[in-house]
Length: 206
Image 1 (cartoon, one colour):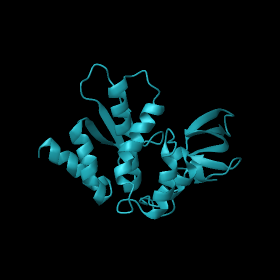
Image 2 (spheres, rainbow, N blue to C red):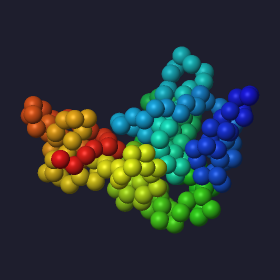
Image 3 (cartoon, rainbow, N blue to C red):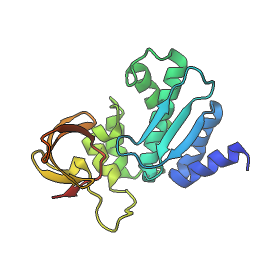
Image 4 (cartoon, helix red, strand yellow):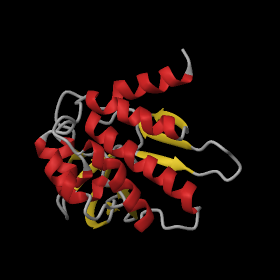
């Protein structure tokens, strides 16, 4: 299988059907290394800029639902194009990135691709995009309704826990404190230490 067919097939398996060709065309216009990554609690995807490499890399978590995968893919492609055009000194989520992200999202803001309950908050989100769609609580809540449940039961995220509530994360007991953009300051009960944890982290109620 040649690389074009491989990339297209990867996208077909991950994004909504009507968005696969568009996503592939973005890759074809300006190719990059595209890696579907293992699940990472700290991020949904990333763009890695390496000044010593001609071809850059974009990675996206394998376990995102199709709508979250699509938004994340466009988010990272926008980073790639912004850095390629203006260099590494621009703000990662500044005006240049926001403008490119909006322009790349515009052709797919359709109910042929997104369900209405995602499309409405997504359009609102794009008026002033945040560093992560997860930081937009309304959009994040609607997108997560479509998460593929791999654990037989509702997946609980740190975002779902109220401030002051205790929860379990990887066998350790924490108390949720204040949210800082895409991360939450959490107090580990046993040690008294505080940690910043991603809002996307899967947790269990105590």
